[in-house]
Amino acid sequence: MTTSTLIPAVSRMRSLADSRAMANNPTQVLTKYSEEFGDTFRFYLGGIKEAIVTTDPAVIEHVLKVNAGNYRKSEIQVKRMGHFLGKGLLTTEGEAWKTQRRLIQKGFDRKQLDALSVIMQDSLAESLREFDTQIDNGPVDIYPHLMKITFAMVARSLFGARLKDEDIELVSHTICTVQEFIVKQTLQPYLNPWFEVSGELTKHEEMRKSADAVLMAYIKKRRNEPPALDLLQTLMDARYSDGEGMSDELILSESMQLLVAGHETSSNGLSWLLYLLSSRPDCLEQVRREFDDVLGDSPLSHADVPKFPFTTQVIQEALRLYPPFWMVDREAIADDRIGDIAIPAGSMVIVHVYGAHHAPKHWAAPESFDTDRFIKGKEKLRAPFTYLPFGGGPRGCIGNNYAMLQMLMILSDLLRRYDFQVSPGQTIEAQAMVILRPKNGIRMTFTKISPDSSQQLGIL
Image (cartoon, rainbow, N blue to C red; front, side):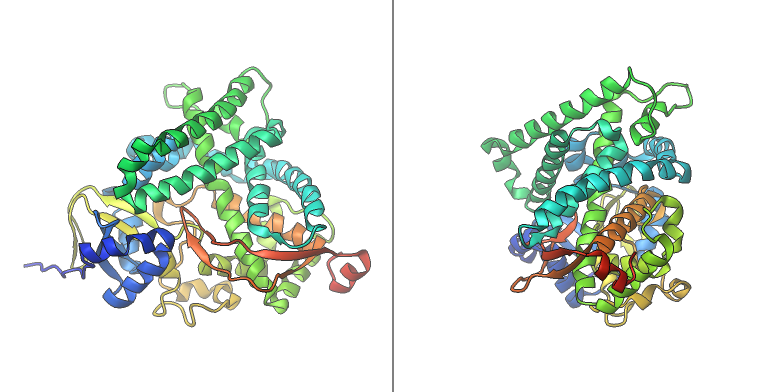
């Protein structure tokens, strides 16, 4: 006879009492629960929706990989995000998802990333010209600047140079605002009736429609233009087994979702990385030296990505400390069992990525910034599914190679152009929205590196 372990549970009353704290800082609340109840426990999201939260790598691997077919994306993504972002790769399930994944994957293969490198570098050069004017006025909050840089880069990777600055700004603002609203809907579900009657829901729907209209105009215009070397062309050229292509509406949904997923990972990762490097001049010097040895004063391309082992370690450690996707949610389709833990059909399972990345049983001194953790070969000593900044299993992030290229490209230019330091008197704190971001930003002072000083630093 098979027995089941009773999963420890946070009471509904306590979950409800903690819902405001959850809305403000869910990673802090879930970490506190993990310390009290163990690797896997139950609680009630917003005091209403029961969920199983886990940092156990065996449970995570089972849900995301071993029996992934039994776990679909939860209501958070399928209903809440789907309502605003449409039925694309992030919000689709089953065979439809497999088909879309296969078609879109081509946009992130080596040949396409080689072609996109030129578009990305042109976009970055334009963004840094504007950044130069901003830093002359004193300290800047690096987070919104990096958001703007990465969003422009992803937008132009999708739509080519045709996308206007004002359109990029409108779509970027819409995505950020709508995502914050989705988090409120999810973590404080008892407010949803108020959102509807107060007009908040309608206001965000209208914002989405305006952004949709901007992108749809580009899609329809492209139908009558020569082919281009961007991701939109990949979407338009894709064909199903019957020879048919994607509708304009589906291309719009996929474009919007690629914009959402494609810029925040890099901008958040780079914000935290610059913050961490500012306190480690030894690491900073070694990263600069590696860029100098490989690139000299040349731009970075996709072919260069494997040539930066130390910088890659630094980025990986920053993503461990501050994983952009701090949680992954799934819902069990049928009853399941993971060892002696029973997962009833319909159960929501939250993979607490941040908790897994900071678990003392898997990481020595987990709060410290230690780049040696990711020396090549060390991953074999680490339990699988204790590190998953891009998710895991068949639904892992499709654009992880693009994200790594983007981070290396931006970092290489920033470090060869500027010295920087964190402005004093700040409280730097992470806030888990859809993405784990700096709650109050990160103010930094940037100074341009002169030719003489750059030679002393060994970066030209």
